Image (cartoon, rainbow, N blue to C red; front, side):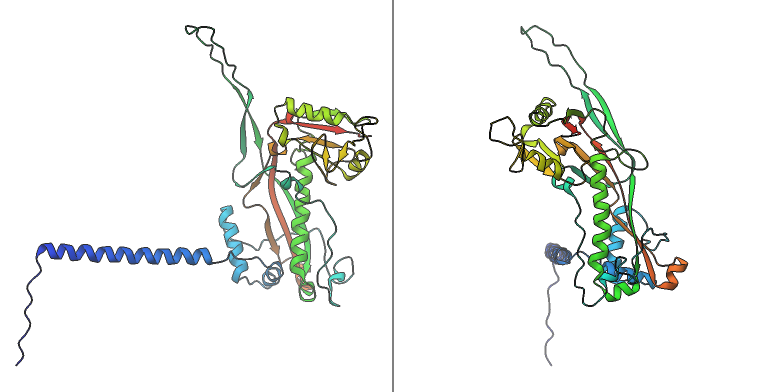
Length: 366
């Protein structure tokens, strides 16, 4: 008969050491698991929104996959309950019944539609400040009058205290919308994904650029640079040396030289590219994409015969929520029976010119 093995009981010190070692290994294992999960999240691609698939699925009351994930994430950022299907009466119509309405997109094999040329997102490229995710109405405090320093003639002299004067700029959401009707047949017979997304997003994007430059501030529009009180002016009559004056005024408003830029229309550029700065000087007002030796740009969104000069980083464009919101209505009675899907892109934003004297506007340029 084999003898049983006898083990000595663990001492309290050994039991404590074993417990500490076990806890350490558990913690190490948990750290490895957390690192694996973090890497998996990092490797996972953000969900992509397929406009064509989205319209088609929602028209049948069904939403799944990456489209659902993308819209849920957008709703989460906006702080709203996920509800992508909302009734809406659209303003435009796309069908394959006629060429201009969308028939030009119908196969005999149409690979990609040719977009109309439009000014789009120039303001972004010129460096304006853009912020997303706003919730309530906004105010931007600013210094209206600075403090005044004192020089002390002797070590016993007492300085006089001064107080800066503050003001604030208010922003409230202004909403722009792009709308269209999207037929089920179009989604089956054309590459509708690129067309629908491009048409809606660029149309609204162009409207935002126009509002930043010359929004009226009434009828639901933001107030743009040109109409803001305190913006300086320059005569546009026989404009040549006046461009140097515009640069001078910007510098006198404490705009740093490297931030000064000019913006006008293609027609004004063509005019000034053939006009000398000074008679016999051999240099033109608009020369090699520069005016008065500062960067110059053109946009068809600038009002005719107008030029702006200043520091565009002093323009603030705020978006409420995540920015553009896509909404679908597959249930409007007449269109539902015809297989027509209504869609819109909605954006809420506002514009603030943080330092109006930093901008100079020349109008009626000849």
